Each structure stands twice: as C-alpha cells, then as structure tokens.
Image (tube, rainbow, N blue to C red):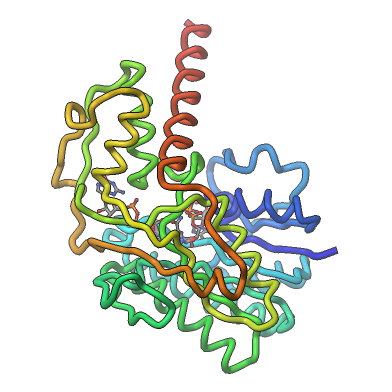
Amino acid sequence: MRTALITGITGQDGAYLAKFLLQKGYQVHGMVRRGSTLPFERIADLTDRIELHQGDLLDQMALNRLLEKVQPTEVYNLAAQSFVPTSFDQPILTGEVTALGVTRILEAVRTVDPTIRFYQASSSEMFGKVYEEPQRESTPFWPRSPYGVSKMYGHWMTVNYRESYDLFACSGILFNHESPLRGIEFVTRKITYAVARIAQGLQNELRLGNLDAERDWGFAGDYVEAMWLMLQAEHPDDFVVATGQKHTVREFCRLAFERVELDWKKYVVVDEKFYRPADVNTLCGDPAKAKAELGWEPKVSFEQLVHMMVDADMKRVKADIKLLKEES
Ligand code: NDP
Ligand code: GDR
C-alpha cells in the first residue's frame, strides 16, 4: 500500500488532497501543529480514515522522527504561513515556516529516506511583478511580498535538492485555487461569505481593498489532482498549474452578488486598510506543460466556482441562523 504524509493537512488543500488520496487507496498521514484549540473542521469527516501526528515545520528533529515513524512513499509539503498580508506583518515567522521549513523537510527526506517522492507547494506569487503573460515555468520571478520571497526560496531549494541529491522532488507552481473550504481571510471566501450574510440580512456592507487585482482562479479540488500526477510521473519536474484565464476582484464580486440577485455596487466599499504595501496586480498562468506531460486539465469554470462558493456559504449561514433560533 502506498503511504502519503501531508503537511498542512488541516488547510484547504490538505483536506482535498487527503480525500483524493484516500480514494486512490493510499494510507494517509497528516502532520498537525499543537494548538490551544483543535477544531480540524476541514478534515472532520476524514479523521477515522487518516492518522494525525503532531509536528511543526519549525522543528527539524520532529520532522525526522515523523518520517522514520510513518515511512511514507510520498510527502506533500503543503504547510506554510500562506496569507500574504500576514507576511508583511510577520516576515521573520513567514521566512522560518514558508522558506526554511522547506529546507527542513527536504533535509528530513534526504537523511531518512531519499527514495521518498516529494511535492513542494510553490506559488504564482513568485511571479509577482510579471515579466510576461501568461506566466509559464520559464518566466523569471519577481516576488512582491515576504510570502512570495519565501516561496521562491522554497522553490529553488526543491530544485537544488533534486539536482544535488537526485531526490524525486517536484515543485508545483500553483495559481490561486479556491473552494468552499477556502480560509475566510482570502478575498474569494471573504466575498462569498459576506454575500451570504448580506442576502440573509446579517450584514449590510463588504469592505475590500484592490478591486482591480486580476487573478487566475481555479478550483482546489482540481488542483490537488495535479499535485498527485506530478509524483506519478517518470521524472521529477516543475509545473505551472492554472486555468489560463484571469478575472478581476470586481468581476468576482459582480458574479457572486448576482448569484443571490443583488447588485454588488450597493454593498462593496473600498477600504484602504486592505491595500498591501506592494501588491501583485495581475496573474495568469499557462498550464500547457501540465496538460501535455501530465494530462492535467481544470474541470470547474470560473463561474461554476463562484456559484459553488456562494451556494455553500448560503447553506452555512442559513444553518447557523436555524441553530441560533433553536437555541433562543
Ligand atoms: P492554508 O492556509 O489553508 O493551510 C496552511 C496549512 O499550513 C495549515 O494546515 C496550517 O496549519 C499549516 N501550517 C502553518 N504553519 C505551520 C507550521 N509551522 N508547521 C506545520 N504546519 C503549519 O493553505 P492552502 O491549503 O490554501 O495552501 C496549501 C499550500 O499551497 C500552502 O503552502 C500555500 O502557500 C500554497 N499555495 C496555495 C495556493 C492557493 O491558492 N490556495 C496557491 C499556491 C500555493 P494550522 O491549521 O495549524 O494553521
Ligand atoms: P493572494 O490571495 O494574495 O493572491 O494569495 P488573496 O485572496 O488574499 O488576494 C487576492 C487579491 O485580492 C486583492 N484584495 C483582497 N485580498 C484580501 N485577502 N482581502 C481583501 O479585502 C481584498 N481586497 C482586494 C488582494 O490585494 C490581492 O491582489 C493566495 C494565497 O492562497 C497564497 O498562499 C497563494 O500562494 C496565492 O494565492 C497564489
């Protein structure tokens, strides 16, 4: 039986990947941080089928011990301080986790079992101030945040360990991918949750930052398949994973509000508080290599994604209201 270890299993992608690998017949292990609360809500329906272990990307010894114990055939390094604005407030912590954390887990793989296949969650944020459109594997990087800089370090360490030690190490340069499990602080989920609350009369405005920012948004469920495909290939390599289409934050708002028959212009307020010291204004990826070499293609369209997220938040908000009524 194939055994996978996922760091960041409690995050959006970790939850989708765990489910995907279970369906493929893997034994799935996840690394979780010790916290004062343990909600693990994204993987609540999987906990009887996966094994969770405490560990942290900050702790080299714990990583080594974890690999010795689990003996995985594949490691997916999804853990990171992944929110761009926090990386401006906590650049050192972001560097420790999102950058050096990659070296720590690569060192664990190299010393414990160099036959392990390794996936690194790299990011389109590395392209930053873009040199060309669409961005592909050969496009130079110019990151615009401590997060982007950290991801770039992790990316090159992955490449370096592949070249230096012949590890089967792949870096997936994933463009933004979203879902009903997306963290509430990211713009798409912030919008769809607010749309649901506004539609239910619980909120009357939505404060956002840069509405002109353009992103290539795909569905997380589609993107975790690309991660897995990379580790099944004959040779390790790096791949852009994207839809090839970009939309503005404004367009996302329009579609999301339209789903509940509201006009976004009546509710969205621009608030400079949400502007970033330096933003990535536009991103659009070219997934041609992933299609040609992995046979990967996105299945969910932008419109379907927006509708899926709004519908899920409508359901959640309605359930919360029902619960509150029953309790009062
Ligand atoms: P999330 O923010 O939802 O999840 C991040 C995960 O990392 C959580 O499980 C979190 O655990 C864990 N984590 C944070 N710090 C540490 C640490 N010190 N040690 C161990 N675990 C830690 O991210 P996503 O699921 O959206 O993304 C997965 C990965 O892909 C990330 O590396 C992200 O940077 C990258 N990425 C994401 C993209 C996207 O659009 N979603 C696009 C490109 C790259 P906890 O629950 O305890 O906080
Ligand atoms: P991003 O995602 O920074 O691309 O990183 P996010 O959804 O946070 O921002 C996308 C764009 O929307 C603009 N924006 C706002 N963003 C947030 N969060 N909140 C707002 O109110 C708001 N208003 C406008 C931002 O300025 C930005 O331009 C995500 C993360 O998942 C990373 O971990 C991942 O690597 C990249 O996607 C690819």
